[in-house]
Length: 100
Image 1 (cartoon, helix red, strand yellow):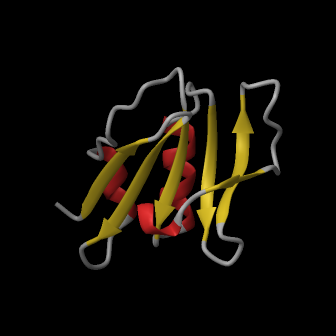
Image 2: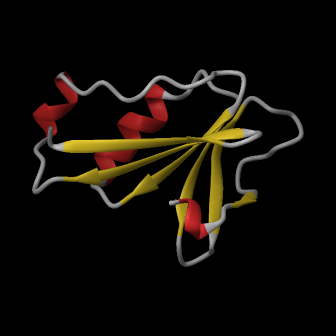
């Protein structure tokens, strides 16, 4: 498989980390099956990949409570979409870098 996913359940979100096994091409999206998650929680995405892969994953996990993207420069995950009134887009969620 060109993309390996690792999933870790946390109290308020599911951490979905991915690693690429070499270069990937956009056609991979036609057969990609991201891991299932509990939609009553949020999702934090982590991994090094092309922006189009991140866009696909954010769209895929849209039904969850929120989607955030881990940024190692900030040391947390930035909320990019939210259905949770207490959590706004642009907020940062603390993520322990050892969890990645």
